[in-house]
Image 1 (cartoon, rainbow, N blue to C red):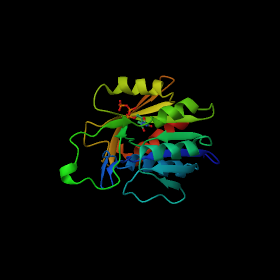
Image 2 (image 1 turned 45 degrees about the vertical axis):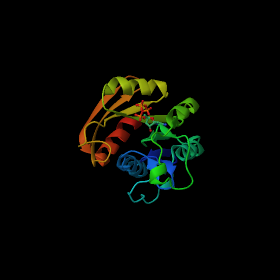
Image 3 (image 1 turned 120 degrees about the vertical axis):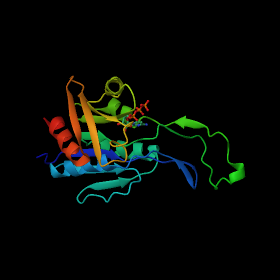
Length: 212
Ligand code: CTP
């Protein structure tokens, strides 16, 4: 049991607002992140979950911080990072946001043909730069092609201990499904294929591997 150890998890999508009634987001359901939070709790961790907007009920005994934008998620992750022993960055963070947010609803006839986008900070990369010896940092890679190659690049670039590769081109797994298939890569060169299973089962298997 991981008594007195802290686990920080992010889950779900972020929303980047264009005006008060429109935003840019992605189809992440938050199911994987919430399954990981439940598993961490079961194993005795003190769990902090930072979540984008999802329709899943929070788990008893877990501290939940609800956020919307990538910047709000970044601030919440940084706030809880220094005391976290294990960090699982499972959220599908929007890479970009509109440069301007209109404070009034844009009328149909005024709606711009192009929306200028600017990059959001990479939260995980920032956590990787601040990582201390006692911390284990785990990221996810959502890929539609060259999965292993891209996941390994992210593992290195973001200074991670593990990365979980998701094939998001297959709609029976990943994003909004109850099921998934994951390949885990460690910075030490380990590779583990976790076969098609429920997200709960995959969360159990991920914890077994990572805590070994
Ligand atoms: N991530 C993050 N902050 C961002 C973008 C991504 O923390 N602004 C994290 C995700 O939560 C995930 C990992 O980085 O754990 C990889 O995210 P992914 O979307 O697969 O890749 P990106 O780094 O955004 O790169 P690309 O979109 O080019 O594949």
